[in-house]
Length: 141
Ligand SMILES: Nc1nc2c([nH]c(=O)n2[C@@H]2O[C@H](COP(=O)(O)OP(=O)(O)OP(=O)(O)O)[C@@H](O)[C@H]2O)c(=O)[nH]1
Image 1 (cartoon, rainbow, N blue to C red):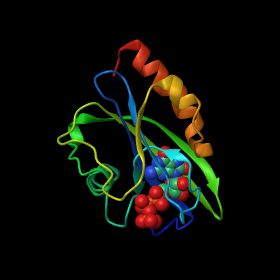
Image 2: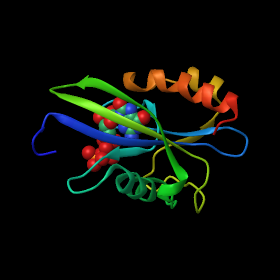
Image 3: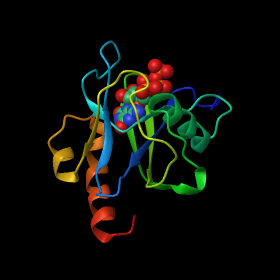
Image 4: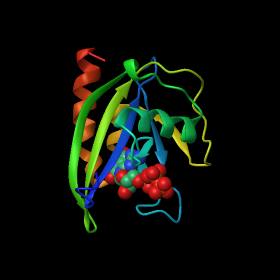
C-alpha cells in the first residue's frame, strides 16, 4: 500500500437474509456522499488484509461477527474518487453471528433487489446491483 498512496482500498459486504433482502445503510451527514445508501464496510487500514478489515468494519458498524470462510468475493469496482482511485471490493455473505444494529447511528434498511434499484447509491455501486441480482436469481448465493 505504501508504494501506491493514491489507491483507496475499501471493502464492503452484501449481507443477504433468508428472504433474499440485502442490508444497506445510509451514509451519515458530514461524510462525503452523505445521504446515499451503501453496503456496510469501509477502508482497509494499513497492515490489514481485506477480510480482516471487513470483519472489523461489520463489527464496528453493525455489531455482528462474520467469519472469513462465510464471505465470498462477488465483484469489485475501480473508480476515480477525488485525487485517489477507489478500489471497492464487494463480498457476499449469508451467515453471521448476531443481529445487525446501527451501532454508529446510521439508518439501516433490508431491501430487495427491486427496491435497491430505486435507491440513490454511490456511483461505484451501480454495477453491483446487476451482479447481486444474477447471483440471487441463480440461487448461487
Ligand atoms: N462502505 C462503503 N463505502 C463505499 C461504497 N461505495 C463507495 O463508493 N464507497 C466509498 O468508499 C469509501 C469508504 O469510506 P468510509 O468513509 O465509509 O470509510 P470508513 O468507514 O473507514 O470511514 P472513516 O474515514 O470515517 O474512518 C468512501 O469514499 C465511500 O464513499 C459502499 O457501498 N460501501
